[in-house]
Image (cartoon, rainbow, N blue to C red; front, side):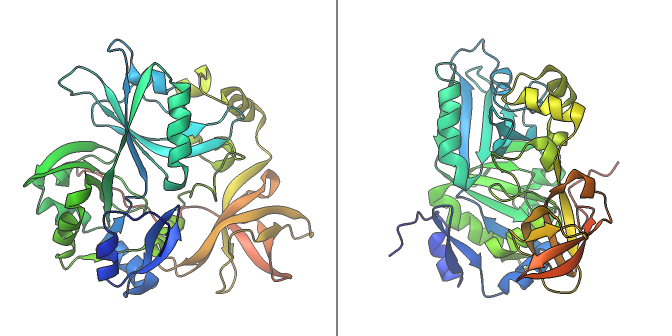
Length: 377
């Protein structure tokens, strides 16, 4: 009997024939009978349903109505939060004092509350959630209250996701990308965000645990929808160049090294006011010694995490942080860090696999185009 936690959808995963593996302290489906390749392709072509209930969900609110919660949280993250409107969402980074990344997270501003308090809805990574919430509580002690939510979280991703979900919730079809709305389906109170981790259009739906299986079965009843496991989730995000915390970013990695400066607004770059700001500002002025890049190995064999990267002259210049086969791309793909002088697209490198040097090139990411929702003008 496993000591790992189980999400509200665990019994359904078993019923659907999922292969269960331990992940971030939970028993999670890595694949279903369709297989990783089939699940990946189905998500790119139709709609894939993912259980992401292991991730951390919380509501952050100020203890004083006169305190601007967005301004307060900007002391911990470098994102532009003050300018967010009600229901607008932003990707940001929980920063360490040394300029490294404690976690990456999604932050949504929720203003229309009967009590007049503004709130932030936070979604953080599963493996970091306890440390994240402890860190936030400690840093904002007495100024803010963090309500940790025990709710299921279901992602519906792919070009058919909007069409399927709109059959039940018509208003979601025209939701802006990176926005959130509160809605109801029968007796279910749903929090629907238009975002995701596959590079495709899609949604994440927060729902009460006891209603999660009923809602999930409702979506799976559509021919366009298949259940998708962690295996395809990883290959999908890798193809579109999205970082996985603990692999491609961590406390030893700065946003400048990781190519995530787009997540730090101009005002924040100039004003600072977040942990590690002085280091980030120095790196913006002086540059960085290493950079995250895409890597294309020659041949068909994938280069896995921790594969060492060498220059053509035989010097070690970096390491792969994520790698595998890209089904939509049609070949092996990877990302990792190399010394800055080797980061130009097209630079030839060698990957050391089982003691043998395999040729590869630095490549532009994403490997597959991102297809996020853009309203028709």
